[in-house]
Length: 150
Image (cartoon, rainbow, N blue to C red; front, side):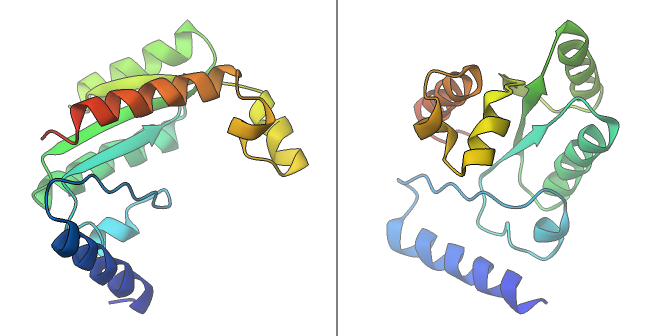
């Protein structure tokens, strides 16, 4: 096993052991399947797969759901990202429904994120009222309310 994955898995295990099950821990992992296949998700109770309206992204979301299920992680949800219009929304909804990936919500395409990246500032500081930031806040509140139910 790659030492980086072993380190992250060990760190997550230690955090879970020290804080118990009464605490939510959010880990943002890079897109793809490697971290799951390397056991990094051993202590995970929920996976939130962020999918975009492009085949490769949707297919990765499907594979994340499949692998997570194989690993015993039954709570896998999706979030639609970079949704520009009704066609994007429908494509994501149809794909996720066909592959058993329930959608928790969506984040609209927001050109201010590119602007924020250009100036090197976090979107929440650069343009806090932007549509993507507002959607992310709403999703964060929803996840907190749910408390990682599985």
